[in-house]
Length: 299
Image (cartoon, rainbow, N blue to C red; front, side, top):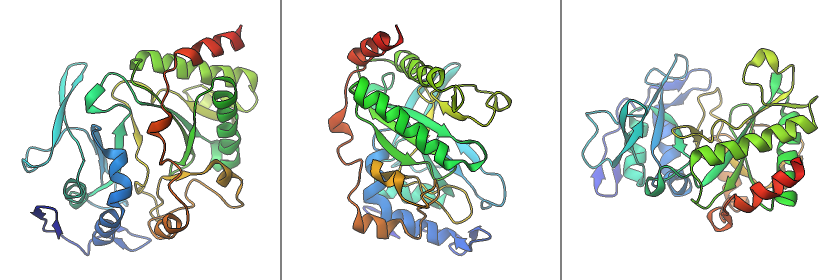
């Protein structure tokens, strides 16, 4: 396959990676080749965590942060500080890199919440809504509750996305003014405020046995070195569902679920619906004023 300045030899094209669906490695390569213009803006300049499945989704895959030593020298990397040393992570800014990683059996792309230009200060805040026992409607209710608080009371812009797995992600664009500790603490205060107001529906309990059929609002992704799944990534689930940005009104559609959109129907959607996250970066704000507004609500 010719991509940019590099000719990539795709290996084992006919290898089945999704046993029950019959989806082959070549199908995945063709998907990401066609999706490149849509997914690359969400990967650009972000340290990447690859979720790889060399033996298909029928066997356990693995997460990889460090670039492999055998990766070619044209693959861009960045050194990222961790507690006990450094990571050398891939930065996927080109179609060549994207397809090369897919050829290495990367099915899902997880990205940092900050860019290489400001690695210690996130440019987005994420609320990961994980519903119990497949209760997607509870995730929808939680997302709407978060949106109402953030937009109406705290004057922040919110965006919604299916995770492609079980629930929803609510994302908030930020100016890179505050570090991860500050943003995580703010996200925690928001989550706890909502859980305290609706204790029968929502919880911030990390342990599953403490959630008692309530929606878990996960704010911990807003931590240094944590990641979130990139929009338009395939998930390693039968049928190859795709993490998909939505318009808020789409949450009201009958039959909507975290896995509504797959690698098979996502392109038809993109032909019909303009990208709901197209103005994401333009609506970035500092959390300083929002923190003051939240403090007034709490008190």
